[in-house]
Image (tube, rainbow over all chains, first blue to last red; front, side, top):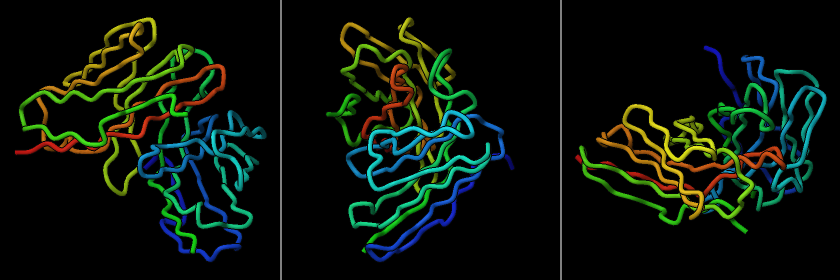
Length: 117
Length: 112
């Protein structure tokens, strides 16, 4: 079934450890996104990529890094996790990105629940 | 500074009645508005959208209304069904910043 997969489903991590959340899409979408969902704050954009080889900062990028080596994969790395990064992380993709034309529908993965102790 | 606000954290509606979810925004440069629906342990899924040049868009039981002068949009679901119970997120496209800005979400519960 076409769509977005995320791994792991959930993770408990000690503060200070490095962690990479994986995201893969098979829809050949140009744009990909990482969001975090926190109670009372909704979904906040961490980083995005409009096309392979390019990335951009979202609303809450500090403490996170991304790479887009190819169309399908968009990993999110926490270099040194802190408790405030405890959240549910969603990866999403869209065909064209958020600039120009009609607003692209974004397709979301099932999420990764991360707890930093 | 929340540019997109959903001021009602939760809403409870009887099955068969109309559900109205509200969303307010502050940025007059938003050019598209979208609604997403989210079930527990799943990612959000797209529901319906509206361009800022329109004031209404309808898709089956779902209608979105946009009042640009009031910077307000609403999602109407009629008739409401038990499967509509979910968290609904309003989102707005900031074309200049190339991103979607999401509201906090409203948990809708449809009671039988």
